[in-house]
Image (cartoon, rainbow, N blue to C red; front, side, top):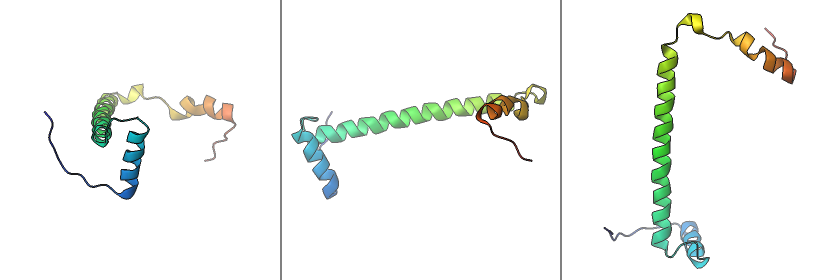
Length: 89
């Protein structure tokens, strides 16, 4: 289903749309706007997936017993030595 609507653009946006249609990147300004909206939808979906994965990882780490924690000094010592960083403290 296609819905007809009216949109307003800044001069900059209108010029960009017109240029892209003129270059043959899009068949029309409507097609360009539709492509931009589809990209926004994909971006939001990917963001939601990433946030869910991060939340799952945080929950999993919250369940990790303290005895299984990694000592940060030991974990990063090799990296610090390799890049020549001296820890001051």
